Length: 96
Image (cartoon, rainbow, N blue to C red):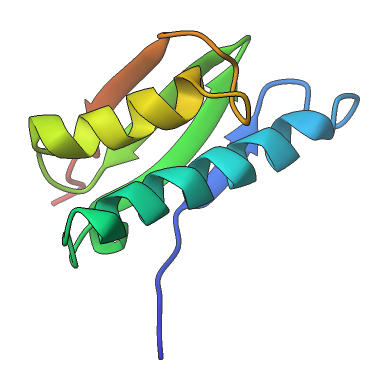
């Protein structure tokens, strides 16, 4: 089984390592929701996840659906996340 998981980063992760741990929990929550909804291509669409001062930035390889965006919103708003609705979605810019 091969999974190309997204790169996970956070502002101030060198002095606040719990930020990376939080994103890992949120990522697992969002993937679990997507799996529950029957979305088998969810993981492959995500390029990077970044926590910037309590804002989750999700960078996608391709345009996500509203349901896919909602998976991250629900995860970030939960007790395992930041408990806020501050989620931003971006599309990875092509280098070609």
